[in-house]
Length: 359
Ligand SMILES: Cc1ncc(COP(=O)(O)O)c(C=O)c1O
Image (cartoon, rainbow, N blue to C red; front, side):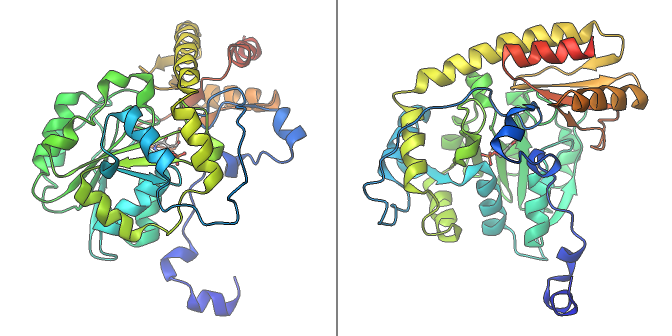
């Protein structure tokens, strides 16, 4: 970095490591290069989508929150339009929540590692401190959480969790929300909820003032490239977040494709979930019989986390797959996840190929 930029930049950003997204670790390159690889490292859905868009009004700015999109998500989620904010992926929702509730260099967020990396990155970017209360056996440590009451402004809970994959028990979520009901927002990140829809926490939005639910079209809807997510909360919270978000967060083509996916093509999503669950069950059974695999984590999402018997085996498996153009995600540097790798559930054909390589 030049001297000038070094002098002018916020000091803490100079050494900050950005989020190591799957695409930063392995760029997709041109279409030919991308198609030669099997991408099982970003919890995307397999298969391509075919959507038609009209460019009739492309000379105009889109509505702040496009009507067709909000109506579609309202019908899908059973919530009122006033409880929904469409965002540039759930990631933008995370950022908006931190910017709206945490004062830079004064307030803190709370995370429960191992968990999704963007909560901490967004907090760091904004200058919010990060308090960690690790999961215990993949569920919440309620005693640990109770010790942080009054010390944090936003609590991020991920259910189903990434990278662990399991749901947090609803009773625990309610206890956590009650613990913080007077002094912190509790965000339930439901990026993977379509894989076990009955477990949603949206019903808690009417009961508690301090709850926000995050959703996305990137996983079960197979639209990660679209960048479309939803923040679900009380009307009061949505009004607040609407002051912080960009003026035109959802482009017209995004609104058009997302609305179609949520209405006339909704059955595609349910089909995607069903196939994914079948392929996942088969992969879990197979992993459990491999002598290099010590533990397979329970998964309610579109990926499976497993622990290898040791670091050598973990590296061997990861490298062998990379050498065969199959990309999975190494999670072993995360707290509690020594020797762990995560496989996103691709198509039946992709998972079969992975098994063949490892056999
Ligand atoms: C738990 C969790 N939350 C949020 C996101 C971000 O989703 P989006 O693609 O909508 O930004 C992801 C993406 O992997 C995730 O795993």
